Length: 409
Ligand code: LLP
Image (cartoon, rainbow, N blue to C red):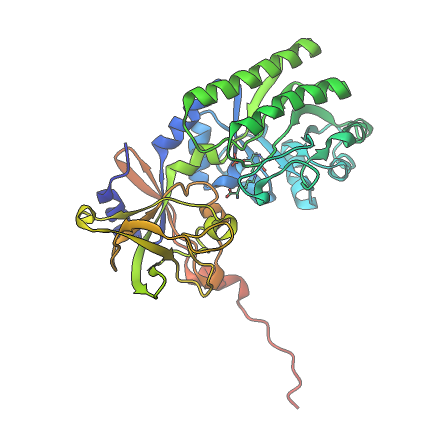
């Protein structure tokens, strides 16, 4: 079921704008598309709302955490520690204490991280994240492989990482490669061969391999079937070499939640310059930073019964922040790139689509704007899954303001 304009209007009325709206059924449909993999591990950085984590858990999905906070969220969503993997390039004391307390497996992306864990936690279960020597991203900022990437253990340094794992008596359970959040499957497919090659080259024995994430936000079942088939073939080659079964994991974020979510916002101002018609809405890049940060395009539509009668108009959709870059319709270079909409008016609701991944999770409180609420639609029902942040909560950490020690004499 599509979320109707009437429901968007009701949600805006009930919760105010801006507000994030997610569709639970769409998320479940995306999960179903990956069922051939032995294990789907949700990269919660895409959207870590505890209610979405619960939805994932109830659908049989497991979870990846990249920080102390994401570990706490995983446990709050009632994942068992065995259902969580902590993935990072470094580990701090607080996080190490938590993973040790619960016995949560750790995916290590550097030799120093292996040392930091191993010195305190002999016998702990670890994964090894390998930088295979190539990567791909929809932006250079989301490319996580190759010589310019800080992520994972560089392929030629794998022997040192394996030696450190042995030295500390850590238990290697899996190999992981994630080359970035990209645009296509062609780059991802290369990872299959890289995984087989690494296992052969370094004589590694593991029970599990992870294909990482980065799957395009596209529900083309045939394409996903071909992607699975490549990984399944790689897994079989690895299993034949090792002489035992190997579990195949996939670790998507965007694929599972991007298209299920929108940012609903209201038009407050329409004004013209000789160059542009600006439509100013109450959401800014503090809410959805992707257009400003990556030049990402989020399709925009207008919620209104009479939009069919309005002439299309090229407009620049922008937010309320005191910064020229607070524009939702811009190119990667930051050049304004108007979009065509049924001539928007003050009071209209606008929907910024494909905002379920890296939307709310990358929000900030810039300009002291509170975090927007989140609403989950499930069939005909909907519920608030995060309240709008209150201004007093936003400033609470700064109160009481320390007394200034100044010499008044
Ligand atoms: N696994 C690891 C180790 C990752 O670092 C990531 C994403 C994923 C899985 C999931 O990748 P996905 O399936 O979502 O592409 N903020 C950017 C995306 C950054 C992704 C960071 N790591 C954006 O808004 O496009």
